[in-house]
Amino acid sequence: MKFKDKDLIIFDFDGTLINSIPDLTLAINKMLAYYNASPLTIQHVTPFIGNGAKPLVQRALEYAMPDKKLTDAFFKEAFEIYLAAYKNETCKDTFMYPGVLETLKDLKKRGFKIVICTNKPYGFIAPILETLDIKQYFNSWIGEDSLAKKKPDALPLLHLVKQMETTIEKSVMVGDSKNDILAAQNANMESIGVSYGYNYNENIADYNPTVVVDNFSELQNLF
Image (cartoon, rainbow, N blue to C red):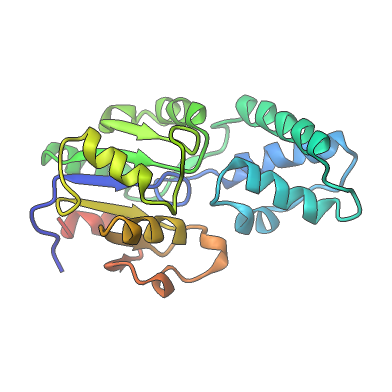
């Protein structure tokens, strides 16, 4: 199929444009080491990702320290340790998925507005874009703490549509997670699901995106 008359492409970040699991896992394990808890593997951490930083930390603590009561004070301390660890390792082993760079160049050259809507904290977005040298391809980006609500709520998508001075009909959401597809559906927006991302180890097709692609470079043929 072909998406016609689109001018805004909204991308998810982790699991769609980049694979950040190695660095997220490293930060989680630095936090767990502070409490002398056993480290988690990438396979453990992967299904914990998607709703934002706090749910990631909570799931990791509950899995690694099941006998520890998760009080507000304990979680606050653990979360701050995680954020500090991730800040130090934001883009150590994070990498772009195959075809991302070439596709971003192509879409930008063809005049599309390109933005990021992620449930990652806002402060981590720019450093990663700068390290991977792809910041110049994006018109704007928002994180989980940019607005009052985050994906799967429609608010972040509606905000970006308004900011980019376009319409829902001329916009499309691209992501690997059910949160991306549900946010698009809540905004009455078409969506593209990528099958290679995290998505809690679930099949993205089960959430009925407009179309599913297996490789990022396939996007060049959809617009």
